[in-house]
Image (cartoon, rainbow, N blue to C red):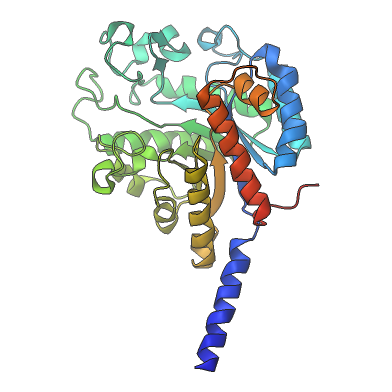
Length: 360
């Protein structure tokens, strides 16, 4: 009995030690700053990210970059190559890995605004001629089977990767609702899981040919009906089986905002590296962190090493978030205030529990 209790004590001590080890990924996701926010951005990256303990920045660029090969897709407030290099250099100096993000497949529009790709190349639309002013849809998608889509997309990816010197790229791929539509002559009747997996693999293979890695959001790989999670943070349009078709070197960002659903461990058990991603509710963020720490403490080394850590998301624009973080936003919206608080609470807990190196 004494020996058994001693053994249990040793196991509990070891589990506690493993739970407190620094997490490989302590990240934040932010929209790219506007050109007139560059000074604010460089200050935040250089001063605040290392102070908080952040070591990874997902920078959502989309079409807000002055693409040289396809200038027609660029937004009016696009960053220059020099500005993007400045952000990358600031991140590197701060010990932060910068990962550029361009939303692929879905999220090609918002409200009445169609974004750069489909605005300049409507021939790539998954639902050509339908939904005037984007009425009655969430976001437009491009057709993943159009013969000309990937050469253009790979040009865009290569440009931001070359400008930043990044070794990983985030392709978004979340909340894809328009896929395998009857309006598309190429995708009509196709298996949606195979279509989704095919697009992930096409981007992954291109990056792999350059020695680079792919990150994506994970919601389309969760069965929303079986789990009860629903159609937003999981899939209700038959894409979830794509998980079994993907290369295991794709990194999954498992976002949940209303509850700390225990899905990250299932991805790790399936062979994928995964990070948990909260947004604006501290209780959810801390619940996700507790799950990551607990799973890392009680898993095999193989599974433990796939549970990379945490990625805080913001979704309120670079300027509003950072100004509110610095206390310089006079009247922040509720969402801005909530996501800043969530970020602070998450990183306070990470520091308090030794899940990141001590702040210098």
